[in-house]
Length: 450
Image (cartoon, rainbow, N blue to C red):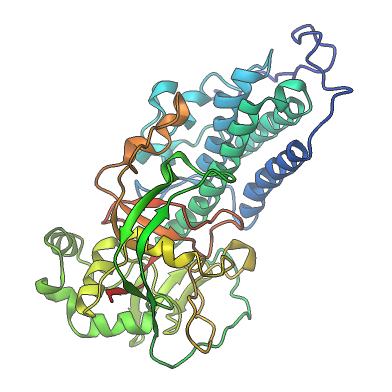
């Protein structure tokens, strides 16, 4: 309907001295901990980063979605803002008024406790509110968050816990924003690039991939309570791991090309039954975003359509493809417990968002004997089903819907990707997706029994 706007009348954030605030609600004179200051700075930084990631995009780019799994950029910006409004400001900022009565329906994702919501596959139909109004929404909520964090309410442990969760939640959506834009640009006939390919290069070894041995044993797995973690990373518990070997780096495009050229995509013996059914149904012939052009293989990336780099990790493969490759190679995928044990001895730095590469890069050469690419380039499929750890209990309330209710029919991925925000990865992190999904930057590393 013409003239209809989803933006409510301008609201005024309650300021110092406003009658809606209690006499003791001001933060003047109180001691503010270093942790609170650091948390506030990280909150501000994460909110700015989301907007920075949209700078290469037009408003038109931010409205549409290429498939049901992906969401429009505008929706990511609004949803991460709604998270703070619904779960923090409405609960802990006295006198806060919501930006729009419509936004809870439009930008709730899957929180049943927060009411009905717009269907996920139809988010690209939301031409209203405009991208400009969503930016106004972010500014409105950011201003309220800044005021909340400057008051006594902002220093309470529950607010700090929710803000920490909100920062990590927004980091997840920053990665999704980029991979969802890739899915959109890959569907465009012009094959636009989000970022211009940089000159960054890394020497890759031509040596056969080494396998590093681990003794196993009874090993403590999961988050030990030091620092932030999602509820699905705990509780910390003991697991029996048998001796195993793990490849020092991820499988490359060149190695995966051998799998293709050997006819694996037409050989049912390489595949699990569900995997083979998916290959036939979706007519897969290669990893996601691969296409043949001028007699060679190219892959759509955030840097545009590029010839595949045979030394870079293969990406955009489903669990079915990762498992089939491992079977074809006479190896297997590691369990999430083996991966976590091995990662304890590795370097947690890697090719993540801060490098600016925006694509998986070849593993650096080394003398062998050390794991590489554990945190960056691609998320690594494991053989582990996404299930609760022994003793797991989801968080109370709406945040309890964050992870626990998805513990069915999905597989765990470990590590990080080239578009994972810096500081968002840790060895206990449990990413999870359905086995047939591959629009994320997913790859694999081989394991074998020792």
